[in-house]
Image (cartoon, rainbow, N blue to C red; front, side, top):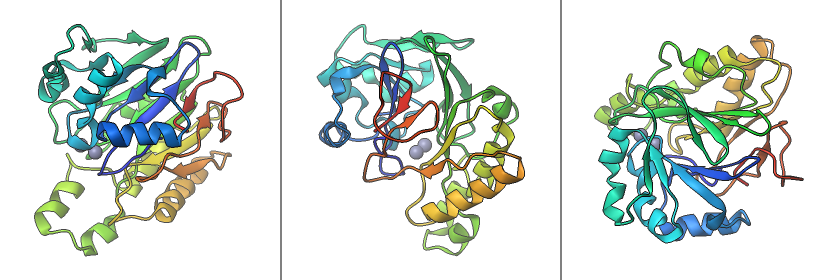
Length: 272
Ligand SMILES: [Zn+2]
Ligand SMILES: [Zn+2]
């Protein structure tokens, strides 16, 4: 997790055969600094996958792809909305197949539509074709749609938006229209909704849950994590690896076995 929140999102996923970046919601200078802080090199990234076109997910996409020659993979509607082709680098854009999976840098990439006020927001499941390890990534979503829990089956790692506490949002400083947007069906996931989804997809093989896109105004990491932990415990999940991504700093990498720290070898790992 190079950073996550309403001021920018970028998630680095390392696999057996390569690395992909999910979203480039920081400018190129900030992205370069985040790679630096994580002791990683943007040149290691084999492709950029975009969830949707909002600035906190895609503002750096065109410039970063120009600078580091990353090919971009996204739905046709997201690509049109981001207009990465305007970067002038032909042949670097690939449309995710509307049906079925696409192979990207040694990952099988499956995607699922999310209810959000963007043209075509997508959740991803990346399956490492070498190890079979699976990570699910669910960022901006106004609610949990039918079928999403099934899409997220058999995950090793889950990255999940846990945007706001419902009461903090209701009693907080946001103007009424913004409260309605964030808390609405096409806005952002509350802690409770995220916890419910995490519990629904939990199983013995789920190693770790990383909460993402936390509001700095209407949430706290402690509240998000305790809500998720208690739902997971009630669902019978025996592990305790729930963490919250930060807006300003990269997280330590989470390995496919749930351990946290630098990878001992090239295994599936999230960020650094
Ligand atoms: Zn966002
Ligand atoms: Zn968004």
